[in-house]
Length: 205
Ligand code: ADP
Ligand code: 5GP
Image (cartoon, rainbow, N blue to C red):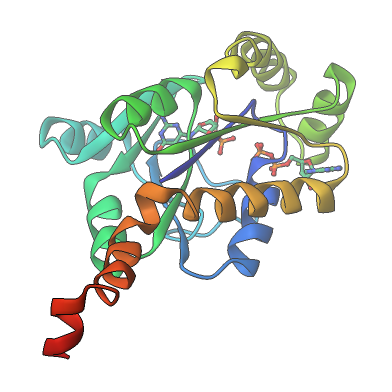
């Protein structure tokens, strides 16, 4: 599991989408949310958009691996996303707020966590506004929450300052590649290789 967090507007979705198009065996974990779709967002691709009552039913039925309330809306990762990815042998890329990331790190100690920072407050404000019209109160709330979220970046394994987009995408791809080369990940294949050096095994082949 590769968990990416960072304040709204830092550029997470943009970086993730590029990485997903360029890295094999990587799948985006489509979350459930009670927030309405933004223009261009598609059901089942960016999010599963559900009502508050439907979300509550999923919480009651323990369908979520983790869920959190962010900016007055609810967001959650379905257990089925994880199970499906594990069954298909692909890595799962999750875009989670800081509470969700903490929960996943506790449940999956080998998850890799990445924090995306904007280059400055002004960059973040500009990017939030560039995403389309919203109430002034929406921008104000997201910028206020951003200041709190940014403080927890040291809890993450890696941090990317998203200034140049190409460089940020390269950094995420390098992090994924390095994670895939961890000895714990390679161990089953490495053990198989080792067994080919075993004289008894050699004889039976
Ligand atoms: P998030 O998923 O973190 O909320 P988005 O990916 O939606 O953020 O990005 C917010 C806005 O910033 C979008 O309009 C996006 O095109 C823009 N953006 C993302 N990364 C960069 C970058 N490196 N330089 C300039 N603009 C960027
Ligand atoms: P946005 O509304 O900008 O798409 O997302 C707002 C925040 O919710 C972001 O910080 C994003 O990382 C977070 N988020 C998206 N999906 C989930 C999820 O399934 N669980 C949690 N905990 N946070 C999520």
